[in-house]
Image (cartoon, rainbow, N blue to C red; front, top):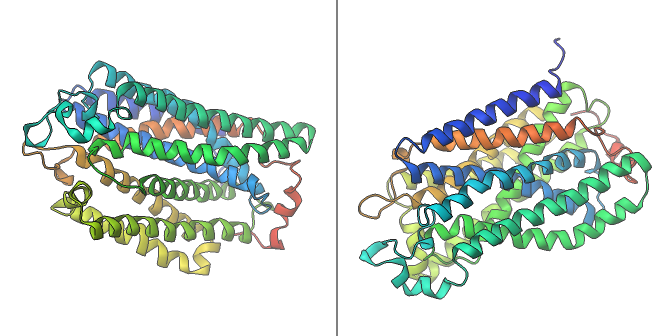
Length: 410
């Protein structure tokens, strides 16, 4: 059996892949489809930010509940938090774009933008009622605040965890618990407003009070999916030998299973309430997604985002064996990307102000953005991974975690 590739070599490969993906995305701006490339970039940045937010929430929830089983895998999520500062930097091109060419991505940023019926944004009563919230200054300031909150919370959690490896002082555990107490509501508010600004406001006429919760569900599902992927990688390399066991994997996948149901509950509730109320300002969002290619994307989400993982996770074997858990998790990670495309890309309109058919959109730019931003995020994770212990060796609950139900290796 060949020796595993060194972390530094692997990090460099992902960095190169990330830079190539970003370069291809940048080149796409000169291909004539500027708005398509820009919205594809919004998909990419939203996807990887969702993964990082989910990891942040999992660490915060671990501390607020003083969980034992998750201590051995918490460190991997802490490494994932290192991506936030790079995600903030990668969002800068979008902020520059809205000041250089307002209305290109989010039409409401230019009051002269023409909307359906030949009216302009500035003459739209619905926009005027929201103008104090939907304006470039607020968008820019709030986006900076979102990343500031996430970076700050991540730095506090990482400092406490990494320093405890050295001195073993229990004060760092208490510090993390206090951080979780105010960090959870702060993160919840930030991710909700981020979802509204970055995605929901692309079609600002639409109303939904559940949009932030929908994004939260996807954040959690994405983080747990990548948690399984990371666990598989560490088990395959041999790092987790004698550390990670079947019951720890079962706890992680059972939580992932719970969020399959939660996502379905939120998504169905949003659809049912809008369908039942039958208010035009709400129903149009679904109406334009129930025709042509977008109908089949919606069906893919219904069966691929809920029914397939729901029945797959029912199996105890799938929840306690790494290979099937890995396959299910990779599928969930992919379908979350489809879900974001479903929410963002219909903002691309044709000459009749109808959404472009899904298959007519150049999905190369979506792939380039996801690979580009993802490569940088994985590079950040691997850089952080090489600087600390594999697990928080002096955490007060590490022994409880290592002996969790005394199970065998997965």
